[in-house]
Image (cartoon, rainbow, N blue to C red; front, side, top):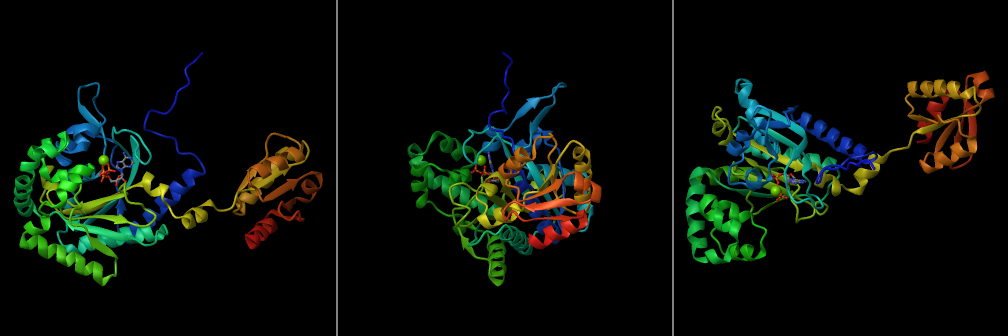
Length: 420
Ligand code: ATP
Ligand code: MG
């Protein structure tokens, strides 16, 4: 017996009608982001492994244990992209985009890869919709990026949105906080898990990101970054909050919100909504002022977000889904042998009038064809038999009411438009 192949663990096929939802979400993202002056960037799925080691950080989970890395036939170390901010930064530097009038606004949509334990909402190939604003250090760009993200989610018909926002400060603030955090955690070392104990040395701030309940409890009383902010970071954060207030964006300051990637500075945020649920993050976002320089580029600041498209689609509001579903196509049913070709011609004529048509091709009986139409959820069928061929018309039947009428393709198109 021959082997039956299945999709690789942690990857999945997206099929119709679900792909229509994916397309609608992507079209919405393109429309909204373009209205803010963003252009699409498409970077390769494959990058130099060193890019992520440098950009995302060796101590991050992503680089430490989640990357799909391998050597190509010439021994080059390459990885499937686990995220895109480092890749967009690499492209920015490679193409000297700092020579464009700043800021440069880019968005991306596409698959990403992380070797994780697959479960609901967690895949090895997953999809992100993200945007990056490069070349402006000010709080106004933070606010604009948040406004754009909120607008996108509103157009997907999410209600009761709230932005959770925090600041992780600049280098100076982080150094001072890091020392205080280590001093607090050091005496409780034995209450930390293995990962966090290691992070105490490599990257203590990442301990704040823990999902372990015992560690979370310990962190309740830990010092907060807010107490260690440099005056410049505090001022930046206050300005972001003031702008959000001015635009009546519902937000909450979340003092323990940190992001798992090393490159974040100052503003970090997430979005919550009743629909979005709370245990799994749907959006990761923040400012990364040091990243471009870290990658060997000019000192250009950046801010951006990445939405987990798979998770976003899992929680889309019903109202958005209903609008996407739309009407099923008209089914064209030929009656008799001659009508099999003439029926195709009529289907073409209807399409030329803007009507979506599926043609019955098998030559099955009208009764069997009508049964198929029912299974497909079709409401209108177009019948073409001897008489219709002679007059160049079709008989449009409404399967719900049973009413029918013989019409030209153009008349049928108009009738369908009136009734829908
Ligand atoms: P998590 O804490 O759930 O692992 P993360 O902090 O690793 O998320 P980011 O690197 O910030 O995630 O990526 C941004 C978004 O991409 C996440 O909020 C999530 O919606 C989505 N995402 C990340 N990893 C996966 C995955 N393996 N499967 C599906 N979506 C994912
Ligand atoms: Mg993760």
